[in-house]
Image (cartoon, rainbow, N blue to C red; front, side):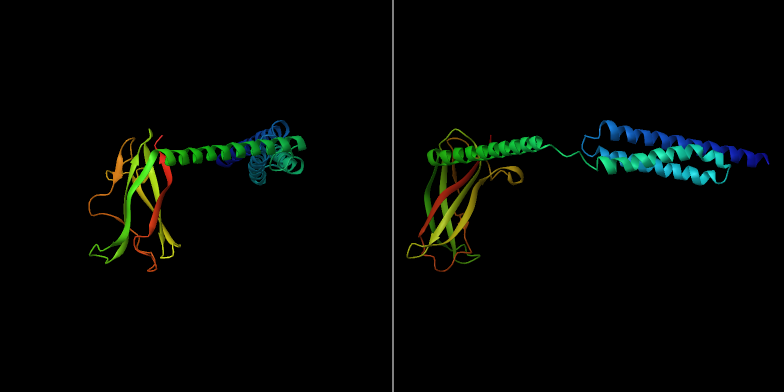
Length: 249
């Protein structure tokens, strides 16, 4: 009998704790909903808190069925507050922020437009700086394009050239585009090559940046191959230009 009484007291204590916790969670959810619902997604957080409190209050109610009904008072109060807090933000504020006024929407659009304009201007400035540097400070010379027999792959179109950086900036990357022409002078194919590629993952001792005043050239007997070029190519008839660079700073 004494043991049964102890278990009875433990159940009552647990019921009251569950009721108090659910009440606190319900009140917290209501405060969030009423005072700071304008912060994005706090309506959703308040609903989640209320749902947890409602679950605890239901647990307390179920446990109270094993004791006297008057012990269900605290879980009932906590459950009612949690239910109110659970439903209120869904009906009044929704899951996110209240609707913005037309003036606020226009202000946001204006800010987005300004950001896009700044981004485009920045990209245009970078492109302009690259074009200017390529035109005035980088020289591509001793360019040749011929069929070469490396003995392994047979005769393949190969190109060789040299590049000098006459400017004052270190170059991490240089892209050279080679255009292959037929006998009539028509471009039938093009290939992109990266003789200088010293950025990120590709950095290695044989792919160093091209510093100011330095010349890049291939080792003796080496060349860039263009195996996919059509047989219509008129051997030796090709042009090359530097199409892109990347500054080290």
